[in-house]
Amino acid sequence: MFSSRLRWNQPANRLSTLLAAKRAAGEPVLDLTESNPTRAGFAYPEALLEPLADLRALHYEPLPQGLLSARKAVAEYYCGAISVDRILLTASTSEAYSYLFQLLADPSDEILSPRPSYPLFEFLAGLSSVTIRQYPMRYDGSWHIDFAAIEQSISPRTRAIVVVNPNNPTGSFLKPEELDRLDTLAAQRGIAIIADEVFSDYGFSAHGVTTLAGQRKALTFSMSGLSKIAALPQLKLGWIVASGPNHAEAMQALELIADTYLSVSTPVQIALPSLLHAGLALRTQIARRTLANLAILRTTLKDSAGGVLNVEGGWYAVVQVPRTRSEEEWVLGLLEQRNVVVQPGFYFDFESEAFLVISLLTPPATFADGIKRLHTFL
Image (tube, rainbow, N blue to C red):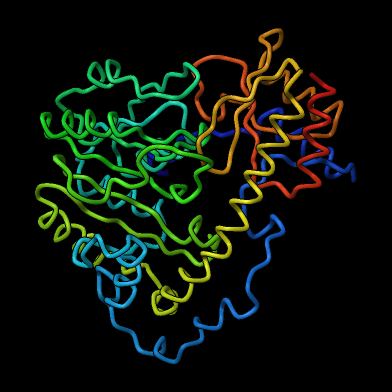
């Protein structure tokens, strides 16, 4: 009696079952998968939420594109390089994906997305009745887009190419030469680019492109929001920035979609300038934490059987482990024998084994202890 869009069949896997059993038994588990900043022990300013009580929020002004004051705050985040008429507010980047899939694709049309990457695209695409086709990222000491695979994947039904910049979980930024090639390819084929830039503020060293918002050859949509920029996923505000040819027409169509839902709350829009300003301090804390944890990871595993793959930014690191056992056996053994939980690479659609994905957002003491146990297990 329910839509076929919901036939995902997600039974509990062995890792989640074992983790639930250990927690039910009261065993202390070191969680190296924490991705929620509000549970990671950061110091949030005491007055952070006061702007949400602004009395202006008692007046409802249903503007599909978002309040002008909020869009000006987003434009300032881009250092004034983006005009407010190219910005549309959403409740989250997930909703932004949904809007863009509805804008660009008819049912059964195709969207290209990277592999490995965060396992969300297929679910969002399924709810919009479009199809995800994956293109591979290749690793040779750093991560690169496989352009030959992209060109082979493009069909008459391809409507957009998704890039995650930096990628989650590989932490790889798009390189300038890759952007130029991607921009040219998309423009020639009449395909849009969708750029997920939620982690773009978190770079570890010299890296590549931080945003695709700006002058583009192809119609391009850049997305970000408070979830990562200000470490406030619970406040539910994101945005889309349109660039390139036909961006004005795209914005008009997006306004029609947004007007159907009007999902962004007035209090968070009014508070946005203050929240983005407060986000500077939180981003500094997160950057210090992730960089320090990455150093611990590299130092601890330096002489082990686990190799830390090159990472340029983001909140995650990838450890390659011997293929003497499957990823599932690695993560189950680590949890069973050392009470440490990590994520297997197949959660993120790595093409081969064996990879472990570790959150650098983890509180320092837990992280150091967990990585020591991983070293011992290896």
